[in-house]
Image (tube, rainbow, N blue to C red; front, side):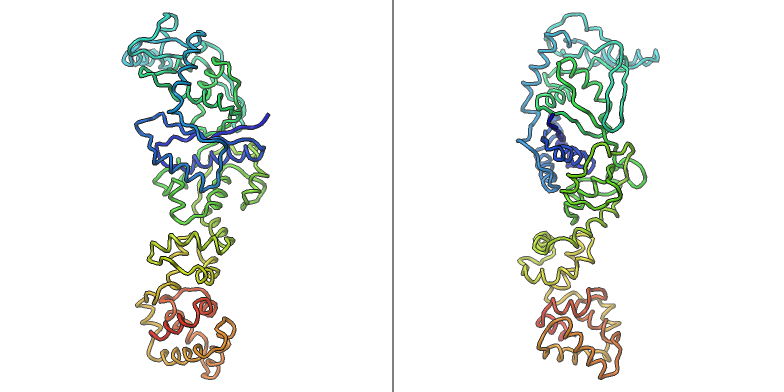
Length: 458
């Protein structure tokens, strides 16, 4: 059997990292098995669904590298299909028309609560043989006894008593299908064989199994993955910081770091922490998913991101940085100059934003000067030494790290000075700050003209 999985987000918000992780697991299961990964947009909530959210979800998935097979399916374009299957169920006697008003149904539930029983619809229209009419809905004729059993890929066998379930509505009074009906028809007609989703959906599964059985569709294999928690062990939410994928992209996280971080929340392969995309596909197994909730660790994400920044090819890194540099006023930056100094910043940057901030010391005509640093290090007694070094650097036949360092050392030896006498003054003069990459590596990357211009300022 060829494996077919799907991801089915609702465009009522941006792609959350919890949804992204579910999509990753579904994508990996399909790709590892040489199967198909499908995308469905569940946009039946016409009040809250927005085209901008749909575009954002698709963009975030593309950013993560989660490619899907076939064109996305939109539920709002399939209402006729859903209603055909509902009509078929009514004709077969597995669903029925109900004329009970919402107020009457709520009264039934209140009575049940008062009697200490399950608050649900009492089935009074099950055998009335009603047809369509104003305000009427179609309900599933659910079994009155027995149990519905699911062999979950993550949690193992799970049993639900049918007496706890309801004659759920399949078609609302406005002729629109309900969520559970649409999901079953979609998954069955799309040929989905494995449904991987969050365990917040686990209570929907027995209801959907009843609909599968009523329609005569074969059941897919279900796997419900535990939720992601914040550091306080509570459900991840805005109070823990960014939760939407696009926010991490905007913060300068690389997609491979985000992918690596999310896949390790609930899945493992030995002690390995860092995976290429190809390694994830090769090693992924649904059997290795954990049953317990995972804690999202932002520091772990930043550690991974720093690793991938250090490994990133310079051409790609320069391209990724350009929009961040443009927002800082550095548009149309010389790509070759960027590539000359980026290796100095790669080990020092956890995000692209941090790297873009550090680029300012290389890109500004004259970097912004830290007043305290200038007062402390650019003193009258050190300026003559900076002037002498500037003259030596101006005459250097080879403006590269080693000969520049050797020339500076020769001057200091001649004057019987220690390197620390000029090290921080040079750094502040060149960058405006007290922390930077190695002095002579930096000077080589900046080039003779920039170095001399900055030294002449002080």
